[in-house]
Structures are given as C-alpha cells and as structure tokens.
Length: 205
Image 1 (cartoon, rainbow, N blue to C red):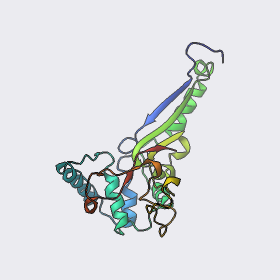
Image 2 (image 1 turned 30 degrees about the vertical axis):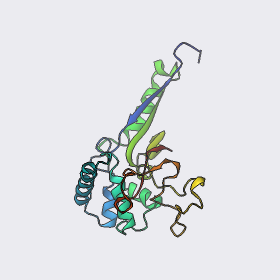
Image 3 (image 1 turned 180 degrees about the horizontal axis):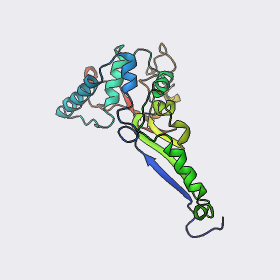
Image 4 (image 1 turned 30 degrees about the horizontal axis):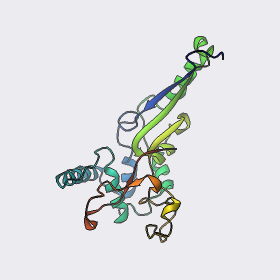
C-alpha cells in the first residue's frame, strides 16, 4: 500500500459486554454454578458501596462488585474459584440473537468490498469490560475478537511481593485475591478490620 498522509487502515470496533452483547450479566452462570442468588449478590454489592460512601471511601460502582466477589471466595461461597472455572462458566453465556455470527460476518463484509480492499482496510473487534476476562475468553464469541480487556485472577503476585508476607503459599496457583502490580485496595483508608478483599484494575490480554 502506498504511503499517504492517512496510513491508518484498521477500523476497530470496541464493544462493551454485559447488556450490550449479552442480555444479562456475565456472572450469571458463575452464580448458578455455586448456588448464589444473583439478586442478593447485586443488592449486597450496592449496599456495600453505599456503606463505604457514608464512611468516606470512594468505591466505583462499575467494579465495586469485585470486592464482594472476592469476599465470597474468602468465606467459601465461591470455594476453589479459578480461571478454569471462569472459562467453563463462560461457555454458558447466552448472546443476543445474531451473535457471535455478526462479528466474522462484519469482518468479511469489509474484506470483500473492493474499495476497502484497495487500501487494505481491515475490521477488528475488541471487548472492554469491567467483567471477568476469562469468562469472555471461554465464551462463544472469543474466537472472533482481536483483544479482550477485563478483570481477572492473577496466578502469581509480581516478583516484588515474594517473601514479604503478602503471598499466601498455602493457596493454589490461581489466586483471586492477588493482582500483581495492578492490585489495589478500593478501601485502602479503612482500618484493618474494615478492609475487604483487594481488586484489580482491568488489564489487556
């Protein structure tokens, strides 16, 4: 392709996931697997965010559920949760009619257009979500996306945390309460007995 002033030839479609590509929350199969009442979980999450707000702690409404999710892990309600289970639950995610077929169809439509092919224009699909990336990777749409940004379970803490007492060697390799260099406490100012499990910021795959 000849070099011109405008050399970008990739059209990137960036998709939200829950209530955009699917009619429900992606965590629904996860709750079903562990016998958790979904409505109760979200009600408790919203209540916790409000409690934190009244105490002067800012907790994002978008990813505050991670704190409560990890608390469920710590108290045995999601015992054994790991990336394999998340991917297995991802297989049960239901998509809106026409998906995932629309993703490859749209890509092929662009490729077949002579006016696009002449400039080597391509269409790519990306998913950006505050949901669980491994569930997206386990879902039917995963083969048709070029990148997934989301939250996840980190298998190991970053090297700087080794030997500091933060790492719990008694737990499995998939550790839902560790986020490596992306880990942070949403309620970091809380006194120790008020702190909940830490969450991670979304990161690319």
